[in-house]
Length: 633
Image (tube, rainbow, N blue to C red; front, side, top):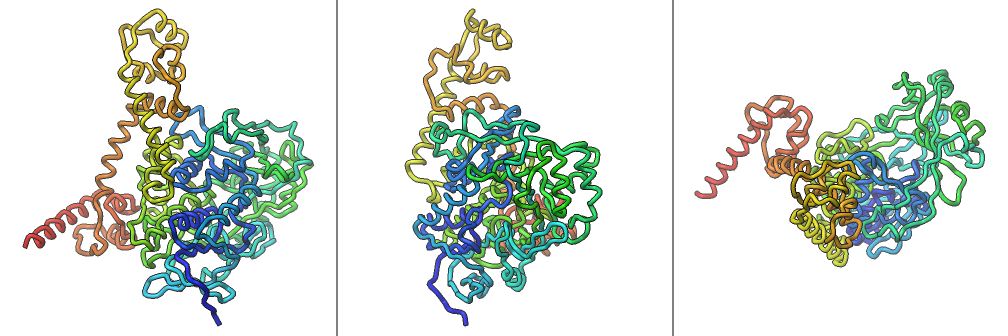
């Protein structure tokens, strides 16, 4: 017989990266929160790659931090190597990545959760979500314990009916041999929720003592460390860093894979789930890119106190004997001992088009979903969804409007909008190319974009908000000074320009105009800028970027203004699309199914054409006129 325990405001199912951010956000916003995990030892576990950030993912981590989340702070405490990627390109694609000590990362996050007010951790598996009149009322565990609640956030990651496979070995477990969550899928289906089967994978781990690093290229961290969290300064987190190593597969590796391709569950039909396009297994790479003679392989340490090394770029589900054979063909791994076999993992997740922009289900009030449960991949994508779901669950309980970030505000907005509007037929991965306004959504200005929102919500302290305001003021004043400071064609200036390969002046100009030249920078101009005063590095960075890319930034801001026009045209919840004459049949069906919140969102639905949007706009204007007339009567 089920037994009812004390009630909570919010119940979070899962304590991975999404669950941690969701639980912390809800609890910090004053909600009595209970987070369930299949194992307390797996809180914020990193079952695959031992790093946080990377291309576009670093943007997400800094946005989570800017809103008041924890991931950035946690990796700053536990990183063992830090590197800014894509520095040879423009600032829009610069992305921070840090190698983590996996055990320390999990341990530190657990410590934060355990010492957060309003937050309780419980080891257990949820079997059922109670819903009455399309409203969440509570959850039941597999031990028949019932916990009434006002909102549920599902963050089950890759645990729902999880199955780990390599070769002919198939274990019904979650990552790293942890228990799978085998009961909740049936409940979701009974609630009318569409469930899908996805697949991801992880490479083998090898013993560091059996690697010949002399045959590999050393990859060191940056000398100047850039923190993920805006609350930290580079000097605060500076430490001794460990190295990663680069090597390559070769034709012998590829031959072994192709000779055994029929033994791969991916090709034998044993794996049914859809895998990630942008993070394929090594056998998938070899088949799909048969013209390539080699693929990069990164050896990444799993932590300071272990000899395990992660073989990045070689995830696989091939049999154990084939894994040994193929890894041993890679330079430096000829005698490597495998500590953990590579494996693929299949799991259930939902179709995310069933969600609103708040990550609440459209048809079930106060039921939210975040992370890989929504069909995304990656720790960072999960954390980004987690904090939004946690914020919105708390705001729902308090009767407040949800926080919905749009595509012009944050990578988080792009991520969520892509999932709920376009859906995904494979594990979704964030990329800079997905963000139309990426010059505005840089990782360096995430605090300037989002920390004010975090403060208004209640996750950012007054002290941190005041520091942001002071930073904004310093940036603006310095830009104005540079725009007003004129400089003549003196011999000193001409010599400076000549030395830096810049065209000599024919007449006077401003320092701001000089700064726009590609070969010059704010730092270089200090040589001829006699009135310059010392400013924090983060301020100097913003001044340099804002002036150097001024024309491009203004052009993108005009594009955002156009985007906002459609985004601000809201579609009534009670609209009857059958009354919108001249819509094509496909568009009519899609609009009925998706129920977009705005004309902007409707325009991004596959199958809805510009002509359909024009018809919809005319209909909405007509309805607006009818409502005005009825109000005047």
